[in-house]
Picture 1 (cartoon, one colour):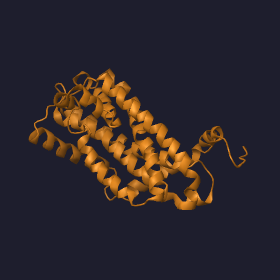
Picture 2 (cartoon, one colour):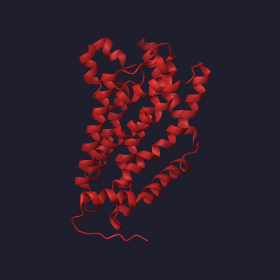
Picture 3 (spheres, rainbow, N blue to C red):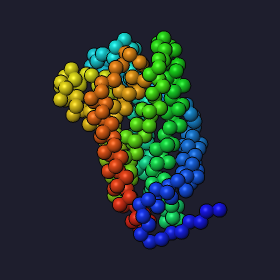
Picture 4 (cartoon, rainbow, N blue to C red):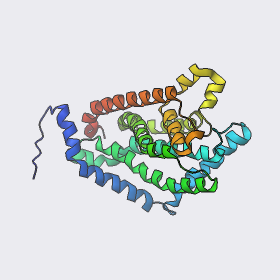
Length: 277
């Protein structure tokens, strides 16, 4: 049996070792959030299928029928939109869960010691359950449109991990803000609704290049979800959705920057969580 000694001024390295030592708490909290999510819905896992399906229909109608956007390569437009909807819903669900996770666990935080980073990280992992369910719908849509997976699909776990990082970094920053400023979550909810239209969910990111040129696309790619969505489409649609290296690298760099900043800010603020909440 290991012995945990809590000392004032514990080193940064000790904190990261504690994350590993408290991994079972991470599993418990993540599993609790998954079970609570589906127990509190009247239609259960169907909700995880209905939301992306409705979103795909709406985005296809808006950008294909009204804005006359084109798909990538020869891919069916609806399938291209669904391939972008999956990571976006994962990102928005992860961000929403992470930024409220600390305030929803006030009793736990105020009573025992553990690395607080476990809580928002567990909330992001919880969103993987919905993403996993949506892959069944993706398989059905690919069969319906006679689009078959290629070797690109082997890289999909990497892009899921990238989406995890894209959500966790901002999530850590926002949950630190919301602990002190509770009303801030309403602003984020509005921004997420707008973000669905300024992120290439319902259209290909190449449309930005066609309208604003290479510089416009480079600036647009500072949005970390641009690289994630382009990566998902490349993995799912294969050669029909080529992955542009420069925008992808810009998005990955932005994701890494958000991760480092989010972790730094969260670690700076978490010492006062128990006092504030």
